[in-house]
Length: 631
Image 1 (spheres, helix red, strand yellow):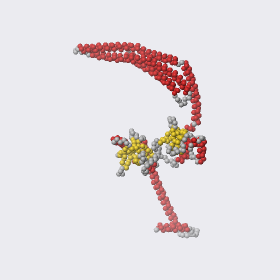
Image 2 (cartoon, helix red, strand yellow):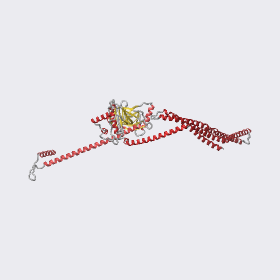
Image 3 (cartoon, helix red, strand yellow):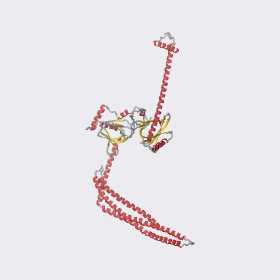
Image 4 (cartoon, one colour):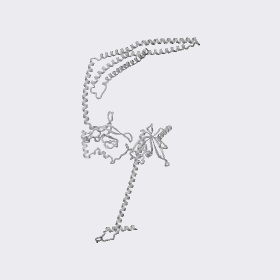
């Protein structure tokens, strides 16, 4: 009996969960059906941009909404019937009968434990010390506990026997209610769905099949069109011109649109490129980003100037300057042809050719006149003319030029710094500096940061001076942002170490070797806070040190080469002088030998040898030179 009760309780719990899922699913189906009906009714309130036959579609959906609304009502009725006829009996059996059995079981267990305690107490009564009062109390306890246990046991066993009948009704009543609710639901459906709705559904099914056939035909035509366009546009996929002769540049345009990359300034010395859609509208150049509804004005093209420019990091670039010269826009196209067409189009718009009645004819006449007077160089020739004659390879990836004006006329060694290949400007705030013993420990900067921040917190110093840190290949400069006056200047060779904080990346510092007052050197650590990542500034300082090191190595190599060339030239001069001296000695020896012969000595054939005037002069000069050498 006890095992049957436990198994019955477990089985009824699982059955209750299954019926609860049916009830929840029916409620969800009823709510979803009602929501579908409401959305179908709201279709006529929607305003679709490409809606053509919305009236027919709206009326059809309204009829569907009516039928689905009736089905929703039927589902709601079914949910109510399931709650009353299926869920109520099984819930009552689970919450009342089974819980009563469990309660009686606990009460019976408690009464059994009380009876055992009373019997044990009665059994421990002593023979020697017989006490009537204690014996009477023990007997009373045994009587009371045994009576309570017997009564509880009878009620418990009665409930267990009754449960065998209740479980039959508890299992059959929910199933009976479920089937009756389903039959009632089907009856409601058969009453509501008449032959008229069946005919309507057949008509809608035929219309859907016709629409599907039309869609298949349209898809077939679109696939053929796509294949033809792919074959014809295969050359247009490449960003460069595969055959410039096949696609000549059209210089008669007064309107143009397409994707270009525009250079935007992100800081005082840095810039970034962003790809946008550009188009001309009248005399204006417009741009439109992704997700934007309309375009925005970039610049006014009337009386503007445009020219191809040579950028360091981009190709096919051109620059548009407004008529007053205050606004300059740098753009990049994908290929040479597109760049030249944009330049020609902007030139035509700048001359207000678009205002003519026949703008294309006016642009063609203007281009013909320009070519007849001064033929314009090609895009490649213009770029080749801008390039330097020699190719210089630099290992630095980014080269930024900054011009800082000095209103106070301070002079310095700015000539070499202006020619530096690295100029990077950062906004920093000075926190403090401290002299350190040595720059060798790796944590010297972190320890200095800790001490300076602690000192500022102790003395309640929260104000910081903002400056511009200019990193070049020669030095580090702290510049006043208002007056552009250089506050401090540190040679890049004096920087010994630079690093940022491990946790707060905006904090960074560097250790440099500074000259002391008595001629000795001291090591000072400077701490700053930056708006940017401190590691980027440290990387820039490290890059500057590398550039300075390589420049110094190149300078020393050039000096050694110059010294070697000078020594070689000096050696060549000495050799040339030695050769000249030897040549002079040989000439003198020859002249001396010629002068030592007897004058007008007859030859072997009996004739006299007559010397010319030049030979006589040479001999006289040789004799004089001999006398001088002897003297």
